[in-house]
Image (cartoon, rainbow, N blue to C red; front, side, top):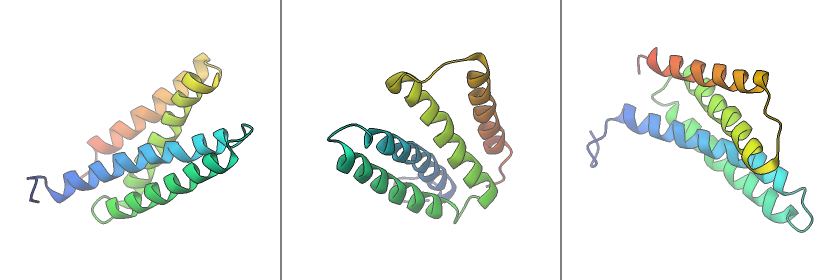
Length: 117
């Protein structure tokens, strides 16, 4: 247990979920960099998000298996980027795209439920 009363496994999962959220930030940054006058900000956001996401993924893999960690990280990034694209960039919403995201989220949940760590 840590000073906060959380186990190392819980901290690793929090780090992994946070890594997944930062994984959403770098494609968003690259998208923003395509707007006039936002190139430096967008690329800067992407670089910062890549660094934080990668570090937290590395940290979480000290406790969580590589296959589970990578799949959860990538799933959060893919599904989250899809949602951000729809909400803020006018990306298309079709039945098959939504079904794909549901399958990604379902896979991430099954990996978490099936995880021994």
